[in-house]
Structures are given as C-alpha cells and as structure tokens.
Length: 192
Image (cartoon, rainbow, N blue to C red; front, side, top):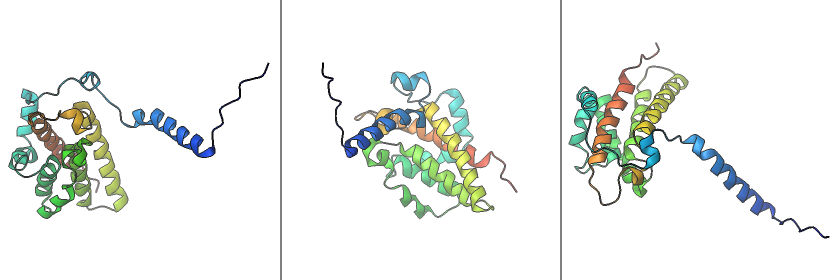
C-alpha cells in the first residue's frame, strides 16, 4: 500500500496562506462587535431618544454639528470642525478630514469615528505635559471613544447607512459622537 503524497507547498504559498489564516483568526479579537443590534444587522435608529437628546443639549460641540453636516461638510469634516472650534484651533485644519468623509470615500470607517479620534489627538496636543504623558492621555480617551462607538454603531459607513437612504441615522450619530468627544475632552482631570 502506498501512502497518498502530501501536497507540496512552496515557501511563498505557505507563508501567504499562513498569514491569511492568522489574520482571519486574529482580526475579530481586534475589532469587537457589541450589542445585539450590531450582531443582527438591524437598522440603526434615526431619532434621538429622550436621554440622548438631553446629553446632546448639554454639549456645545453637538449643538454646532448642524452648522456643518450636510452643508458642504462631510461627517468627518463636521466633527473635526466643531472640535477645532471647541479647542480654539485654526479652522483651516478641517482640511485634514477632507478624505475621511463617506467612510474614507469608500464607505469604510465612519467619518464621525475617525474625526472623533482626530479631535482627541488635537486635544492631547493642547495639554501642558510631556509628549509621552499626553500620548497616554489621548490613548485612554481614544480607547474609551472606540468602546463607546462600537456599542452604538458598526465601524463601516456601508453598515451604518445603506446606499440610497437618507442621512438621518448619520445626523443622529453625529450629535451623539460630538457630545461623547466633548465629554471625553473635558470631563477627565488632566494630570498636573
């Protein structure tokens, strides 16, 4: 009886297949999906709840979103702009977000997610502390924002808003994201 020969894989084939396998095993752990809404693919709400409306009313950044979103500014540009105004930074820095709208122009990572992270980084740059400490401050807030976001909505624009639908779901997320970013910027004590 002869044994069936093992398939022969060249080194390059082995390495590429092994790296794809490892990526497939590891990525779900890097990007946790929380909440039954995200797991079932249910439609996200378009209107703020009473509790969300109260939080939005307390936020100056959320109060300014409507001045930009849908008025020539993308989701990313809108949130970055209200962050710039809140931090009293030059408004022409909004151009940093020009390519992030519409999920980086490809319906990928939501602009409200990416611009919120930009706002937190800019806030860290305003701190009167050494770079390593400011970077740690930023990383803590980005982690908190990421956790908050993944409990609210999917990461991708394509999963948040289906093509051809209105932008009400995005507007709601913009209000909530602005309020959350402002809270993260202002509610924590900055180390002396």
